[in-house]
Image 1: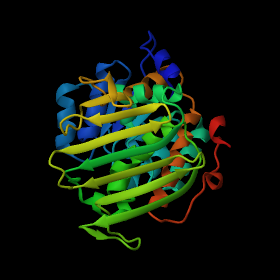
Image 2: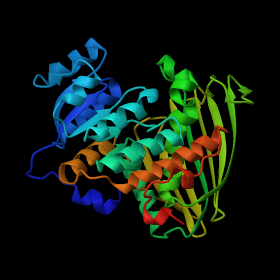
Image 3: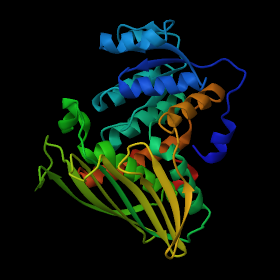
Image 4: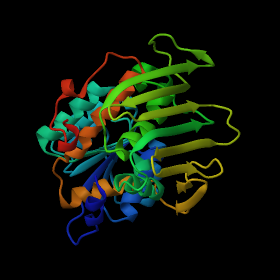
Length: 359
């Protein structure tokens, strides 16, 4: 979804889309509240296996109906479903909802590998229903400024990108640590944001080669197994000659809660996006010219639910399939390459890609 599209997605005096929420944990509840407070959708149904999670929603939303299970949610008269469930369930749940004629907004990763992502996108295209994924960092003021600057040629042709996401903690759900359920460790959980930010900012250029090293407990993982990595580094070489380097981790002793950054260097200058004082939520964007710097964006910035709100507003006005989501296949293919899985080319996962990515 580009900036022009976002500018058009203002609340309108038309019926709000009726939405169901599959998963009412912290993420699902936060996205729900953002959509409700923005008047981008009508919170009609929730479905969660936790009675406590359901009670928490109903206390603030007494008119919301509760579906006993996913099948009952699918039978409800809904325009769209917001999915915030474990990664292993994303593909099946997204495809079933799309096939029932409902739009879908899914937590990242959309699928555990490129094949799953392509299957979901084919389902959305076949049903002609809107499909979105919660790549929330795109919607920070800082990254949108960086994206605009790169697209305008402000720093010249970008030849180097460095992206980092080190989390001093780790997931608190056991399924994250089983690759069969999660699709991978910190690279799948955090690196998906880095790969997406790099390719999105650069206009989704073609990828030529990917190399990586993965570690668990300080030891290199030499082969694919059910064990997941807690530290990963990768180099992504683009056909343009530019190089993207990324690093991410769980439970790394970095002296603060998190280190998150995305730096882009061109022939005419540099751009940087980074968190402030170890925060997971506060970010600054800067432009570099030699040794001088200019602030482009700074806190406060309530960005957490913007991706969900933008999807709901787009659904409110045009609920048809948007081919922009096809770029998720390219991101997933890079993640597959980082993990050393069977190399999957986007040409082998054919859908109707946007024109700029068919070269």
